[in-house]
Image (cartoon, rainbow, N blue to C red; front, side, top):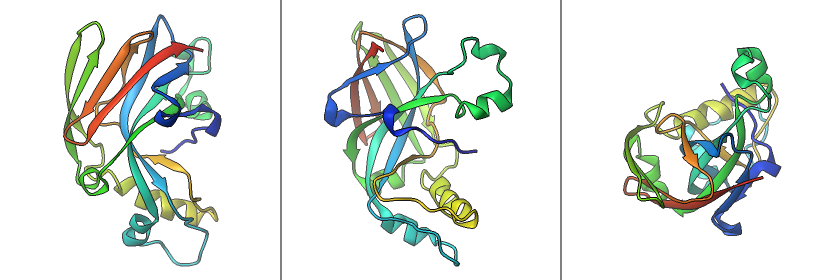
Length: 191
């Protein structure tokens, strides 16, 4: 499965740790992921892309949070087809600090530690759903190529949550540690 995340809903740590979103009951639903930023195009062509070619197109890797929400007023009543049309519940992306690409490439599993300013700490056993965090990129490049589509430099691609989705409070400082890769610090505010 794949779905677009619209450029207008992408927030970066470069703009500050604050992220405006539509919260429900004072909570933001998120998925901890890695974002791969392309440094060069992977245009349409006749022959398949090799994993090495896709790897060479990745310029940077960042800690990221996929922002999860429905655009429906009653999301529990939406069918799978309606959720698919809604972009599979993605409402945005928060791209955090850049991390070591080699370490990230090998990060099939990592401890996820979530700390909220109120001193609440949660530890999660993080595992990438594909085992290899870049494997979905290899699939995506080939899938799009076979449909006459390519990928462009500057695009941020995420490949799956390390810990499913969970809620975080808005209006609180939050730090999410991704194993030995680093920490994403942020603060949600109501849009």
